[in-house]
Image (cartoon, rainbow, N blue to C red; front, side):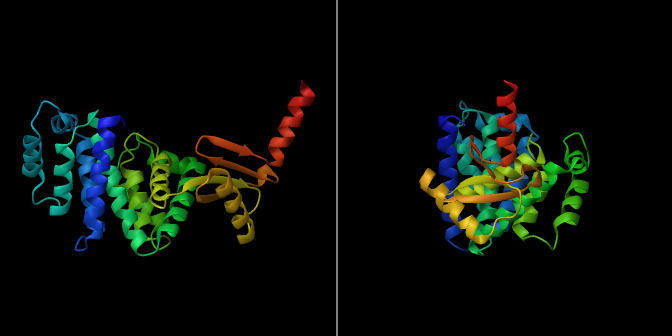
Amino acid sequence: MLGASREALAAGQERLEVLLTSGGVDPTQLGDDLFAVTELLAGNAGLRRGLTDPARPADAKATLVDRLLRGKISDQALELLSGLVRSRWSDPSDLVEAVDGLAVTAELFNAERAHRLDAVEDELFRFSRMVAADVALRDAFAARTVGAERKAELVRTLLEGKVSAETLRLAVQAAVSPRGMRTEQALDHYLEAAAARRRQLVADVVAASPLTEGQRARLSTALRRIYGRDIRINLDVDPEVLGGLRIQVGGELIDSTVLARLNSARRTLAG
């Protein structure tokens, strides 16, 4: 997002936090409402343009939202959306991203309030890796595969009763409405949002075998020393790396696996 859109999103996030912490708001209903608006906006380019047109008066855009959605979504969701469309946006697609982001925040707030945020992060990460590793699942969730309800039902079959309610709702959303991304990419965006809520960076770690609690603690301490911030560790086990760790934090890769060292040695010998 460019400057105007970033400012509009920041203002929307602030209004959302005030709503969520003031009590009397159902975060689940609010998230569902905002996800529904996301789908409406994503599927209607004319509406997106109309609600972000800088030449159109802010009150007129808010009135249009009220006329379209009054009685169809909660008053709190309508209030948030009215505030968003009164703001200036650099690109119409940014409004869709913003509404989707607010929906995710509502879900994560619910998990945080119930002390389930750690679990939601772990569950989303495992499901993301499951989808990424399974060609049949990727095909089932692909944009070219029709049937939103079939995709939602597949997610429920795989996860219902095994994960938290917030994870299930976010996983369904990622499968049904990934907004031009692959399902696993949408899940990764949700993971980034969860990490940001906890003010942490995310380290994707690949190891040959599961780490003990002591090993995780030492790794977390080392990464905190390097980056100056708490680090959320997402662990993926891959026996093919043989030993050592592959660690990716943002765009930075630290590869100390045995496989990487062997490949380096082969390149040296070949040269």
